[in-house]
Image: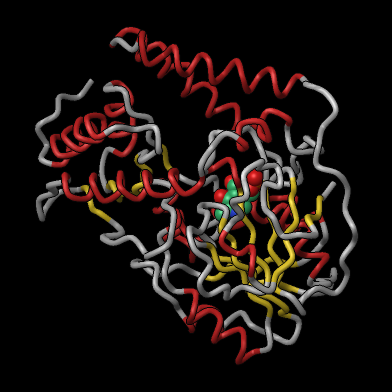
Length: 375
Ligand SMILES: Cc1ncc(COP(=O)(O)O)c(C=O)c1O
């Protein structure tokens, strides 16, 4: 179910008067339980049909394309450039008379090419779908996409929640939606809460043997998740969890954004990566007004070792994403495959303090200079 907030007061959830930046813009805002559901609603709003196709970057997770597949809309994958800049040619090669929209992914809240995508879409009379699942804007200056999708649990410490923002005048069909509250606590709420309590406890018991045990659990789980990853499986949760709503009410979004930006810049200052290192910083700069999801590094060699090494020292890093099978199988997407295996995301979460960022930076520096011991 998708929820509509007629006053555009995001998190009307929130008891305070604060609203999200796009509150006063010419938009409609919908709430959904997940990013996928928000995209699915966006497809309806744009009136995309089974015979249409959309252009999606090949560096994408399976979850993001699931709504298109469910609605039988053809997905065509465009290539990503090494520096993530706009590549007109890769879009032009795929655009045909059945192309209706281009998906732009704001990777990790660090991309800055949206204007060029907007221009391309205007020239070809296409919709621009702005996938902001990795970020939440601190200011909505430009509002360039025709629809924008957000995924709240990437930034907030909550179990689920997504937002669809639709520019006024774009929508074909707008329904009235439903109500936001869930009547009672459910298993998902309990699981989420239990996990958070365990995570907090972990900070106090983190020792090398515990870390090693957790590492083996994590590796097993990842293998299973991968096997079970079903393209069609959209979120089973039908409403925004009550616990998500309760938590969001208590959090200050602007403080979260500021802290994440601060941690990003603080880490950037601390990293001393030598020229010939197998580790490389991908984004040297934060876009103004943007909330970063993580700090991406390219780790060209021993990536798994790098991830395990940081994990054993108390830092959870990961590669992203599980690519769609057709991208995995197609040799023309070798670079996207490389990224999915070698682009490592470092945490810059709002709960991290400088001392932790210092330690993480020091471990990365040690690794990049080749001075760490293999475990
Ligand atoms: C870029 C991108 N878009 C969309 C989604 C889908 O979000 P959700 O998992 O909340 O359905 C994800 C999630 O992994 C994502 O990374």
